[in-house]
Image 1 (cartoon, rainbow, N blue to C red):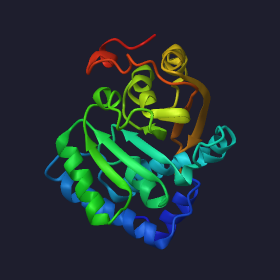
Image 2 (image 1 turned 180 degrees about the vertical axis):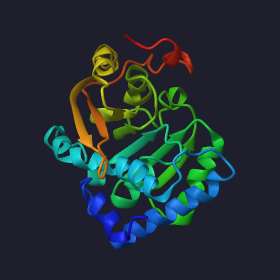
Image 3 (image 1 turned 180 degrees about the horizontal axis):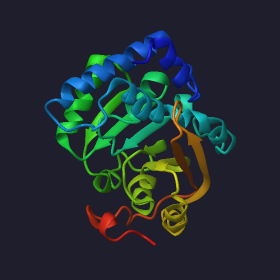
Image 4 (image 1 turned 30 degrees about the vertical axis):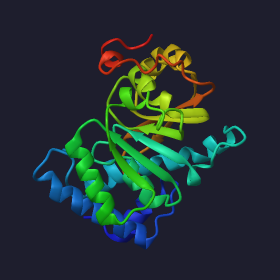
Length: 250
């Protein structure tokens, strides 16, 4: 089992300086996750060291691309540390909750389509005493047409498993012009990224970077696909629930 110092050394490779209070909250989140996973299916990854690397470090690895984002922001877009962010398809809270713990100044919204998971997320938020973070129950196709969420966020992020064309339609409607959608993808996703270029363009964005990083302590590669929102998304997107996944834009 990793010691606290070993965990901090691993997580420091993500670009975030993890303090002792942050580490304590991450460890508490692990305990909450392990406890709740006994009664509902949140994650297949449950061993302590695996969660540290494959959930926490992976979630925080976005920190390695923040300098690139700062260089490519438009005037007026918030820096990441003060940004309004939505985690689309948050599931068990990854990447949103570790990011909120280690970047305390961000405002985070977690959205998930399963009410039981949203209940878990809100319980975790309460027990961790996190501020300026909320979990919302809803389908992103519906929320993306809701004025309370549409084009409100500086960043949309998603670690959800879906084709990038589909994720673009789920996520870009949430992003204000000048902001970014950042997709966590696996290695060897070049063909998928290429096929999503037209979808991103239809939705007001453009793929500006595909950055590959190595997950600390492993030989596993993580791709970050960075899509900039250039203009407002046409009002007809996202389409009705279920359509984007069945008929991806191309």
